[in-house]
Image (cartoon, rainbow, N blue to C red):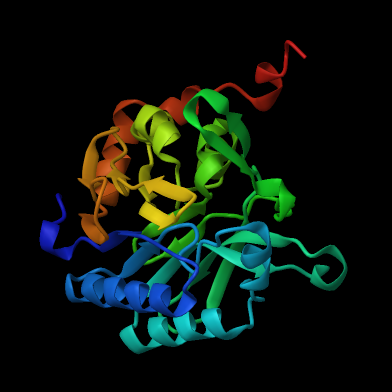
Length: 288
C-alpha cells in the first residue's frame, strides 16, 4: 500500500549567511524556522555556524557558549513554542576544559518538540587545509577539539537521523557506521568554501546517499560572512536513490521543504540489498 504524499513527514533544510552578530543570526534562524513550520515541516535543519561565524580565532572563542548558555536555551524555547524538532548543525560549544584549554567543540545538537536536548554529536574530523592555488586556508584545530565518538542515530518524526558535520562528509567510514546502526537520514550541516563546494559538494552528498541508501539532508551557509570568508551555499536534500530533491541555490538565504518517504527508502533497499551484500569488518581489514 503506497502512503499518500499528504501524510508524509516534511523536513526543512535551511540556508543562511551567519556573521559575527549573534543577535542578527538568531533573528534569521527564527524567521527560517517559523517559515518552515508554516510550510508543514516537523523538523528543521540549520547549518554549521548557525550561531555565528567569527572573523578571527579570538572572536570565535570569545563568542562561544556552553550548552546551558543563552543561545541554546533560546532555541529550546523556540522548538517548544512551535512544537518542532531542530537540528542545530554546528554550535561553538565551550567544553569541560574551557578554563584551561580555551578551545571549543563544533557540536551538532538535536532538540525535540518539547525543546529538550536529545543528542549532541561533536564534529570528529577537523578542517585543517591549505589549498594555496585556490586561496583556501583554514585551520579548525587551532581553536576546536575533535569529538571523541560517533553518536547513535536519533529517532525523530521524520525517521532515524544520523549526525555528521561538514568535513565529516569526506569520510565514508562515518556514514557507513551510522547506516549499520539504523540511520535512515544522514545530515551534513556545513559551511563549505566556494572552491571545495564547486568541485565536491553535490557529488559527495549524492555518493553518501547512494552508498548508504539513506536520505541526505545538508543545511548550508551561503555568501560572505565577513571580509575574509565566503561559503558556497546550495543547501541540499538527496533521496536514497541519489536524486537531488531540493537545492537552495548559491546566493540567497532560504529553505527547501522535502517529504521524507521511508517507504521509498525501504523499496530502494529491498531492490538492491547493499547492506546484506556487505562483508564483515574483518574482510575489509584483510590487507592490514
